[in-house]
Image 1 (cartoon, rainbow, N blue to C red):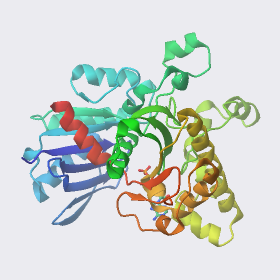
Image 2: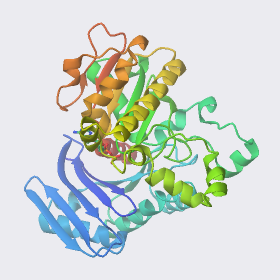
Image 3: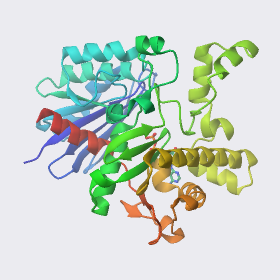
Length: 395
Ligand code: ADP
């Protein structure tokens, strides 16, 4: 029986959505609302029959959701077939450790957590309220990016800071991109025909945001993002790990307050900060090929950080069976995979240059037959994972 789920991903200025029938995993519609809060908003609605684009001012998430419902009414599929709505939620804090059906208490709990994710949780809450107002007959479910990492052991999630302050303010490693790490690690085991419970995996989610996780028998044991999605790997515009002393140093020498440093580290750093504003790896490659030294250094810093984490997580796991690359860069950029694995060969990751160049078309092995570690590319599908989670939560 068809079980169509609407999955919603509300950011501060955008809403991404899909209707996925989890009975056969077919996608009935996808869409994107952009530039919410700006004078000229836009909604793109795509079904197997074609694509529609509507330009309109979209002052807030309520109007965005109204336009989404209107797009379904005008161009299909009929939204009354949808059996539930799944909302991507960035921060679940310590309270929300698994996917949950949303009621007033859940919304109140998420609102309390907004201090932990001021950029990410408020638009999700606005999206939930707006969606509940227009889709009143079906359950709404929250899927937390942090939930997969609720299995981290205390030694991995505890920051070595004054424990009274840490406890009072909920300061610890939470981890993000959990839906992707969970989906990809399961998919990797399934693809290899191996028991997830027996595998030690490292998953490199390399998109615009990037994170890496160590997964033992299907349970996350470490990950690179922390209290916020800022630390860890070098990202498109985010710095990843820096010395936290940078906050007081820049406040002294550059008169920058913590909000200004936070903006610097989130929006003007990472690959873009090093390569004169270029955050996309396709453009970075073009610059490197043209001999741009800044772009080359950005690439080197990116790889250096990545292999450092992989090495550390091999130590955490004790034994590595599978190394997986996923997300925009991980799935498509053969140079990143090649550069990283060349330097990990002594740790058992040997990749085949021809297999590594294969186009991105589903899960594939890129290691050599004699490689002690199986290296995979596994395309992520966070929307499908969310739809499945939603079905599981509503029983
Ligand atoms: P997010 O979901 O975090 O926005 P994605 O996983 O979609 O990010 O990854 C987007 C990034 O993937 C782009 O910024 C770009 O750097 C990289 N990317 C996408 N396609 C390619 C490609 N064909 N070759 C190299 N890099 C690519």
